Image 1: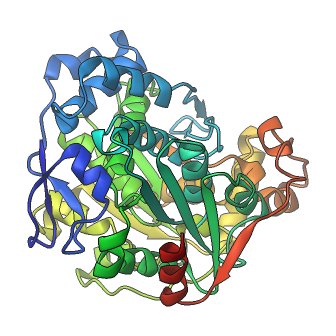
Image 2: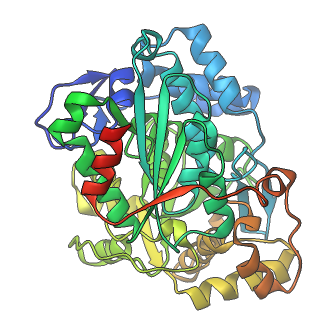
Image 3: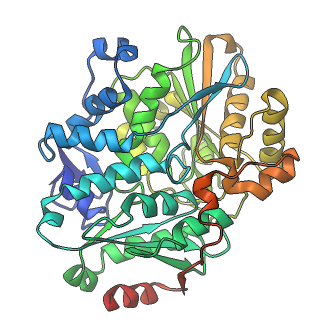
Length: 435
């Protein structure tokens, strides 16, 4: 499989080269030259396959010959070494929990897969150092820090917006040390992301440092997120009904991976992009006009993105056909007050403890059902993308119940935060060059 730039002004590259580069030289996102179709018999018999076997069949066409079969299977086994349980909330709505990995966030899958792919890259094996540069609005930083911790030949620089991530999220990315460096940016996530993108096209940096990104702009992070859509389909309640999936959406890499899975043949009937008040895409789906905005801080901070990078990939999947896209994708946005009310409602219905991002996914399903007459034909699943302990004070304040802190989090609570503060790109560049 080869990958091309969505800015259409760079050479096509192989899988590992695209992972290593992160962003194309023309600042475009890489995209596969074709979307493979899975055999219908495979889809019909998903129940017969393990999660590892499913993931291998899904990702193999995208990896091609860059990683041999035995090593690819090993990478998948090490990536998917935790569960993805589905919990029924109502007769029509269920949740798939994606937070049972080491950093307690859905991004563990992509981060672990990408890190292990790079460890098999001859570039690293030949003794050349690679610097992973990543912006985080919350969970990406912790997942990447864990996934790349102590990986030989790779240094990780994480940029996060000051005061805009939760305490636990911040501790996850600032307390490891070793090859992980955290930069506290005086600005928003969009500012962090702009710095990362600028670094990739800075010729002086490119001449001296090998850079890649572990954000969902990197295909290694992005493509692996398809795995849990297949797992959700395999284990869904009410399999005789049409499947509807609501994805809490910020930078739109996760939902884009789900749409790609659907294009490969996975029978997902409809997707919902559920956002907080950073509603660039829901507004686009109403008007057909794309107007990126400055991000606004919310209690669902990992979704505080005003100009989602991955939406261009979704547009490419549909060849920029707005009406074709609207048939498969709906978009709704919700305020913090609505989010808090949803957390309380879910807890009242089932005794289930949700967090702000998952609660927005739940609200997206409710909004869709309220807009349809024939709702009995659908089974809705929303994604719970992070453990509620990451938003402990917020959630406990809403449901008036203590949330038990997992052992993996207890270990870092007393560790010292270690980060550098920056305000502009020149400071990031200076730090990279000095290292």
